[in-house]
Image 1 (cartoon, one colour):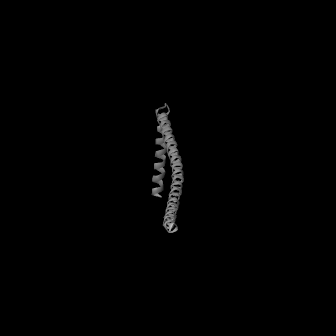
Image 2 (cartoon, one colour; image 1 turned 60 degrees about the vertical axis):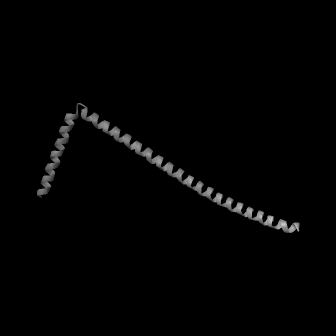
Image 3 (cartoon, rainbow, N blue to C red; image 1 turned 90 degrees about the vertical axis):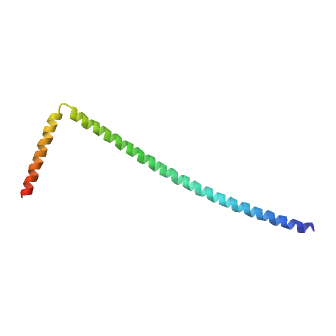
Length: 102
């Protein structure tokens, strides 16, 4: 009779092993999915950092350009420069008026 009593225990152990195997496979699958997400997020992070760096460099260029324009306008030649710009604008207006008549 002891053999009959051992049989349910073996079945129970086999079921526990199968359950453990299923859990292990499920956990490994989740781990793999998480690792893929980590890789994806890391790549997105690199891309976003590169975009942020580009944006910062563009802001620096605009700030530098703005400072250069301010320096030009405050220099001694600013009056002369303004006169030249106004003269060019008048010439352009005359050309436009001529082409409108023709």
